[in-house]
Length: 251
Ligand code: SAH
Image (cartoon, rainbow, N blue to C red; front, top):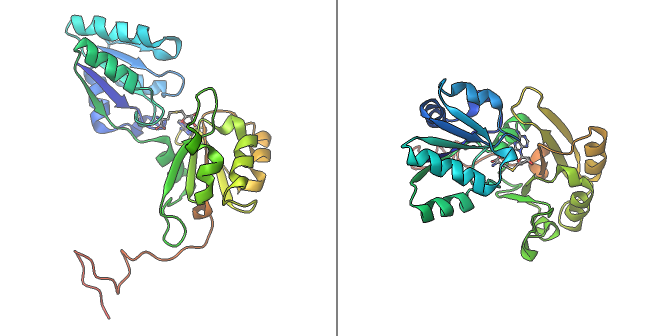
């Protein structure tokens, strides 16, 4: 059995209880060493074999999984955040399916949630934005034409950019081509939930300068949108005049 486990955004205690138990039971752990907190490996038992996938290619990862499976061993593939986002799990799942090796997936706390906590932000504020766009600036991995940043920026919704902090200049230009203005609040969150977390707040007009001044090139998210500002409407959910399935509104 191969368990794909979301390691969470960084802090060792932000893995799920299920993820932690799977690490404790594992005979083998293959972890994404570039971003997974190595402290999580302390959950492993003393006999567990540990591989860092940062120095491995896909075939090598699959070989280890297949080897362990043949010996009846249990492997955990530990991915940063939640494995569904920029995790390159689909290619592994499909290869395992072809080989007839069973697998399961255990979700994790994504870094965009860690960043919201660091920012004390609610991404979906009434009267401001009710959507979160999770995307990235095109890099070596291409982005479909209809999802180019300047297109998605037309919505002016809350936006979280992964894998893009080293490209602040084109990010800023694309955001300004859309509905965001120089004054729209934005933030760079570096290593959310890690001990050396940094939260840098500013505006879209300052984004490039902020990334340069604080020398942020990786392990950071760019969060954009008026939800980082001060204006919003109160929620209906907790409005005393509003009737819900669970509560009768008062006059
Ligand atoms: N699956 C992961 C994302 C992997 S892609 C998740 O759900 O979070 C790697 C990118 O995620 C990094 O380039 C960075 O943009 C972002 N990232 C991962 N961990 C982060 C953290 N603790 N703080 C800020 N950004 C992080």
